[in-house]
Image (cartoon, rainbow, N blue to C red; front, side):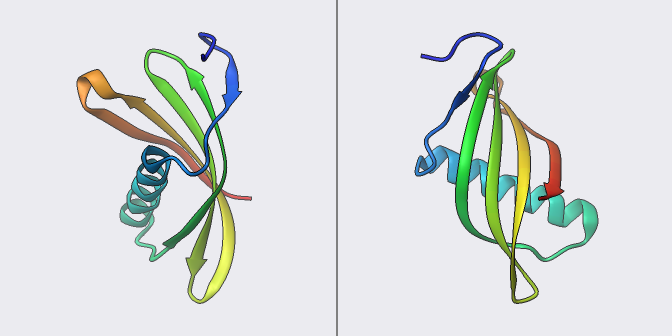
Length: 90
């Protein structure tokens, strides 16, 4: 069980996590006019903060090269709310 405010390890193979990772890539691609493609989730952490903040380390395909990015996605399912907070190359 997650502790409010504490960051805990997540489950990398969760269908929800993959959905949030793809959402992060889509949002980044729209904002930056980029063409990153999802490959896989490497690691996840989560933090309960008026919803859940997901910290997702993911592998993407960028023009034929595999690169690692970190995404921070804030989710409040009871409000149908999802927002990309941060997306950066590692």
